Length: 126
Image (cartoon, rainbow, N blue to C red):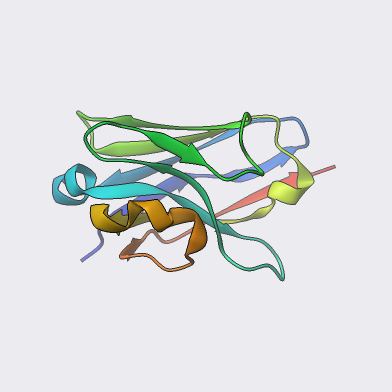
């Protein structure tokens, strides 16, 4: 059973913007931390951004702070990642993910997740 469905991504020039979307089941949306990981060519998977269930607190990886914004739509069980001022080093496969709320604090120190989306490619050219 598919739990997370991603959309968005694509190719853009440096300085441009893209938005990723992730649709979740009501259960996952309401009880799990949700956000994105990414994995660039030859790189390890890293946490990009996370939003907490309930209070909607957000946290970002150091490399994207001030450029990316994670948000949610409670009526649609959707999470979004607005990516602005994109750089070539943002090129990666981006994965929507969900982690149990008891493990939200480890988002940026882990590479695994309880649920994954199918992944979407983001390519930024210089």
